[in-house]
Length: 231
Image 1 (cartoon, rainbow, N blue to C red):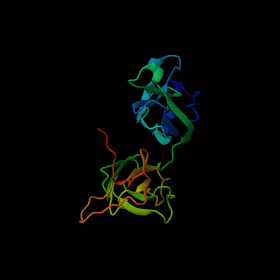
Image 2: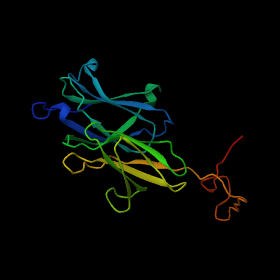
Image 3: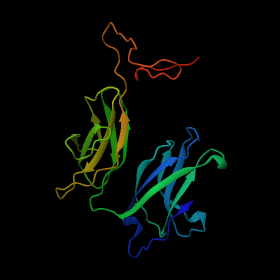
C-alpha cells in the first residue's frame, strides 16, 4: 500500500473529490499486467479497512495519466490509498506513481476512462464513462495536437461512444472527450487516449516495394507496414 495523509472529511467529503495521477510499470519486468486499486482506508494500520473505488491494469513502462472519481464512495474512511497486485514474485513487483493531484469534483465533470477499440486502417471506436451528462464532444487529431484547437476534428455524440471514420492508415492519433453541460457550457477535456491505425490492405496490383529508402542489416528499419519474422 501507498497511503496518503488523512483527508479532512468535514471540509472535503471523500465522495466530492476527484484525483488524477501518472503511472507506469517498473522497467525490466516484461509485459506483466499489474493491477492497481485506488481506494479509501479508515485505519492505515489495518489492511482490511481498505475499500476499493477504482481499479486499473498497467503493463506499459511509459507514464500515462489516470482519473479517479470518488463519487461512488459511501464509507467513512479518510485515507486515500494505492494497492498493487501482480502474479509476479514479490521481488519483481513494481509500479511508479507520480504527479498526484486531488481536487474537488467539478459540477460538470469531465468524462473518464476514454478507451479505444476496434482500430482498423480507416476507423476506430471510442467509448468513455460519464453519468452526469447526456451529450458529448469528441475531438481527435494527429498525435500531439492540443484539444480545443482547429488542429482537431470534432464529432458530437448522444451516447458514451463514437466511431471515428476516414482516418489515415498507419497514423498515430490522439482523442479527447468533453461533456456538453446542461447550462450550455462544457466540461474540461478528458485525459488523452492514443492509438495508431493499422496499415491499409493491398487493393491495387501490381504492388511494388524497392526498399531504396530503408537501411540494411540485422537492425535495419523497414516499411512500417512490413513485419519481421523469425523461425
